Image 1 (tube, rainbow, N blue to C red):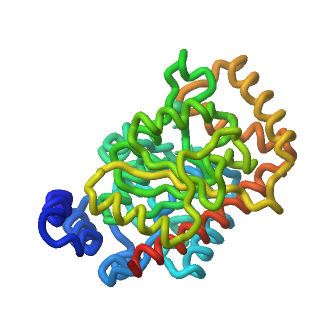
Image 2: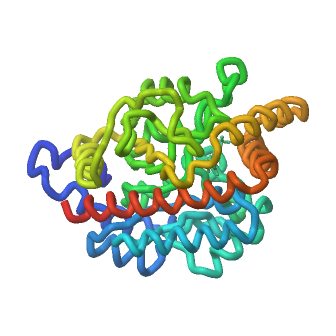
Image 3: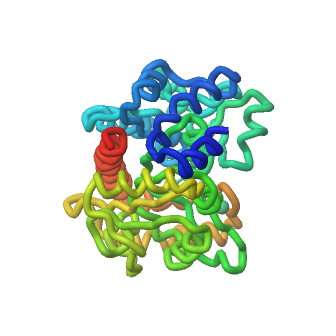
Length: 333
Ligand code: PSU
Ligand code: MN
């Protein structure tokens, strides 16, 4: 209904498209579909900046307790840069937008025992009353339901290497094609086929830009060898792009790739070699499907002696600062 209203805005007064965020959120909440934390609800009501954060990165992306420390630190960075963090997860079968500290702690300590939940899993996790850590796809979908258009994470899923044969293409990419949320991230890891990931995003109609760079970043390194389709040089310009996406009623999302800060870029070669070895091991062990990404991330972390984890934490905090500034610019525009 709110999308009809948003599209109707196009023919009449263009203003106010984003100001419907609160009524979107409120109606989802009153229908009992979502629980929105008091501070997120307040920010949505007042039209101040909100940044969505995912939870698979907490449960499956990092070991405990670094995952909890990072989740807390990322929320703090978002606050320090003028936005309200909304970490998204499913608790006892109910999607939550904004978690308490004890909810964060429980997700982080249970780690792999929490269900990795992408779009296809959402209805099942809710039906069974389970706890689910949302991937980029499920987080985007729930953020959009709550009227949040800016989402920060580490990296998105993509087309896996060999994906032209296995058809292992992350649901993140199709979600980006159908949900109007901008994902601020460090690009996609080189465990993925980055050229094919960019081709797929183009097919899906996803706006892709590098932030302050010409090249699309590859998570641990600033270089993927692929030119980004576009470049954004300021939070204001990124916010303008997001606002026009919504006001045009495109219904699709965006990826804003932020290169890892120079001083944190782990030795690209070391991570690359570990990636090759992890890929070989996954093939030998026959690991596939939704277990593949967590397996590869864990092996690369072990093989690089923690260097990849340190870089991972640094880049997520940096993305959080950039994303919060973009959300603040969007709220002010
Ligand atoms: N890439 C990372 N770290 C992560 C993920 C991806 O560098 O933690 C997680 C995200 O939640 C992403 C998901 O949405 O993995 C993609 O999983 P799959 O490849 O199974 O779609
Ligand atoms: Mn997959």
